[in-house]
View (tube, protein in one colour):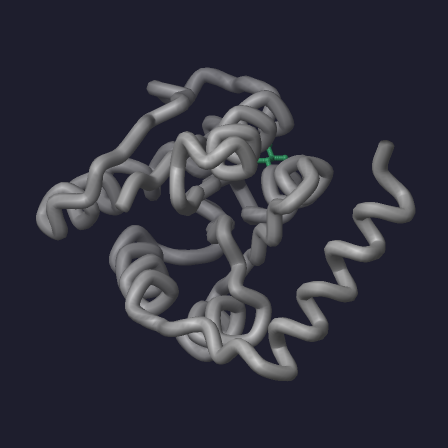
Length: 149
Ligand code: RB5
């Protein structure tokens, strides 16, 4: 499995712990930056990771900003991306089981580095439920087909 990761300055604090965890699991990672806590614009990184996932260059993406919100909104503008912001284990599980989230977004000002790693693990280890959930995801794809050129 290949994972694309990206963050802004607000999410940078979470990145190293997640990279260490992915390395322990021997998961291949492409790090799209940012690489320090200097102020940058989160849409840049949301777009890079989303495009890597949408193109198949990566299987999944992880995005980090101050809240996880802005960077997930940016990622969700790319066709085929289902980016979910989560702050607890229940949602980390549900966003995979129900929504088949292909991008996980976390906030460096919201969750601790330890919880962030736990949420990544739950998301990776949960299986998509399929069936009625697939039907609903197909409906989301229909919205994209109707509204995106
Ligand atoms: C940057 O200050 C902050 O706005 C950003 O990291 C993020 O929280 C946006 O949603």
